[in-house]
Length: 506
Image (tube, rainbow, N blue to C red):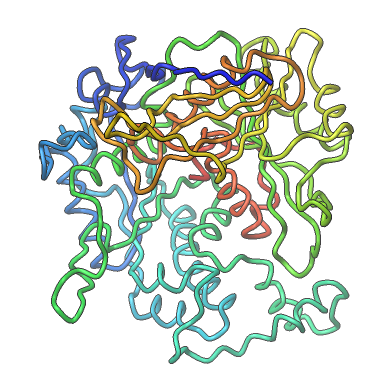
């Protein structure tokens, strides 16, 4: 075994006028977004929430139109926000195209029901029905919907949080009774209808997105306290929640609005080999009692442009209880990747020259045989295992700063460690709280140059259009894998989702 160290230069991003820089904020400020045909001249926003929440959004839309200075100019994390049109070349209306108020008392009573399935489903229905009713009677179509929720929805609209002690009583049948009905049926239609609620996840964010996929409604969920943290204070009069500074919020909110609403990527990876396609595998166990032991699979396809599409695969017993890993059989593996190659060929006129499949686990023989059967002989297929690690650190005894982002240690020609977090000279700091930990990168199937694969992985950490950060710790192929899987399994509609752009899931 030969251990070698490498330093991979920071990947560059491409912006308007084909200019290249490291930091998304620098590129957008100086050159604007990468040129994408069909980008609209104006972005129209729809808002749904309490009247107080709608007022907060209207105030922020006006804020986004102008400059927002940084609170500390000596910190390099965030630049001053220059204004939406200055950054993206697209006009953002100062008022929502559509505003739908939802009664705050109704939200409060719904989310506080004693049965958590009933509580989350009832809260989601308030927003879901209001949006779908608008589509039935009104021809105005916002480019993106901002769903502004009170803090009580965030507090109790998550599966890991129990309901309040003074919860509103729920008359819904028990989960055990519902499981028996879902598996064996019932002679009573009312009970069968009640049991259906247990097919929905106890997660407000994921369930709402899953329920609106069939209408291709693009949603961004925002907490009211993000827009105004003073809404909730402790007994000393201080805001309970600590949020980012206004300029950082402006960068992040505006970037996701542009990506989702304008249907265009703000930046793309520069200097990437042509006709390369990256796929991240997604697995999520179906949490509903009807499908005990089954899991949903999906593939996320990404290009150097940052464009992504999610392909839902088959539901089946993909999780091995022995090693707690997910693996497809040959037929389903072939069907899933065949859809990816078909979509790539449709958009580019030919299959990709290189197809990299990223996963958290190694690929089994039968699984890989299915993948290989789905790609033509002209496409080089490479399987890459990527996972965070806890057992390796690097220290610099003669330096005051942590290991540099981009440091790599190769243990062999097929396996190595890559520091996607660490000290960043452009920021003059390490944006983390503990000693940087690397990710493991292993070429599990096929053949490729390991350092080149690591360069690709490092580049893919800079494609996160849900924020305007310098980089993430994981490549986009895997960063959102859990969220995509959870949305697909969050409701029966999510389980039926056709191939859809990535913007519907983040």
